[in-house]
Image (tube, rainbow, N blue to C red):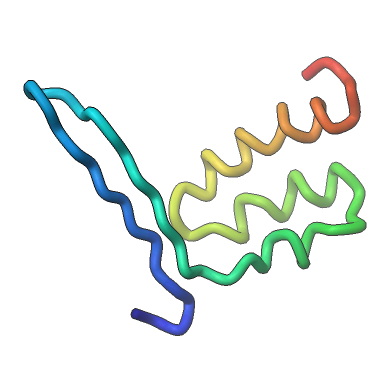
Length: 74
């Protein structure tokens, strides 16, 4: 394990298909601490920089999440 923690994905297959997926993480939850209290446009700008794995997808997913939190259409 690294100081940054680990992200583990376990898949189970049955009949040639994925039948279950388990995710576990020992990574610290710094995103909540870094994003709390920021304006939505700041959050949208920071999200892709926080995650080294799929930063682009985190940024794309952030837009509808921020709109939903503000009860506004995307």
